[in-house]
Amino acid sequence: MIRTVISLDPEDKRWLEQKSKATQTPMTTLIRQAIRRMRLDEQATAPSLDTLLDRTKGMWKGKDGLVYQQAIRWEQK
Image: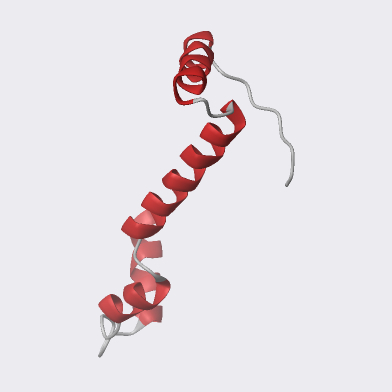
């Protein structure tokens, strides 16, 4: 396992100490669990690349990307 140093606000540190005592769980374990839960939540809500590609395929059917680029560049001048 890789070690790292984090900085906490005083009230967060107090809460973590209290939670650690109440659950008889080391603070490091609580932090690892929180990070893991946050990662899993984020992964569950973020669509996969395959899903994004499926949702957007065919959007440019019959259109010319170069014409679009030139039109945008012309508007910015």
